Length: 228
Image (cartoon, rainbow, N blue to C red; front, side, top):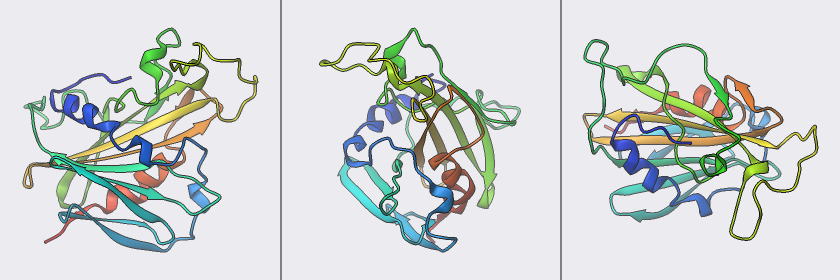
């Protein structure tokens, strides 16, 4: 699933599954209707603030080295898979000298697709962070790099289950999971803030943002500010 565009994402990938057991399972969130429009601020690692829906709760995974890991939970019966990591700004980042942006990143519409139905290992839920292929700008003129990928849950494999798994109904509404990732590389604090979330749906091709991805893109990620 992961395409390594720069060295530092290898480090992010190694840490990406640390908190996976602490987050909610992959279910289809209905975030558009959650909690109305009221928001509340929460702190991240004592360095940043973001706004989340007022009825969400925030949990924190025990620190691993210099990494802080959080997850945002919606109240029942809805479910979210949003996770945030604050980790050291390490490694070499491949920046285009002319544009000042990541070499792999561009503007334009976001399209998420299954990468290869013949490569089930690459489609696993814990396969790593989606490649960051797009960017937008938030407060303080900081760039947010983001991307997505889709995996087919019919190809999930474990030690105790065959691959592909049992056939899914032809019109299943949750066969495919779209994984979204957003990352801010903060040169001043020497930190990376990475947001991830997902959406379950019936299509192996998704245009734009759905579920957790929409909530992150429209509300949570743009609200990121430093604590001064």
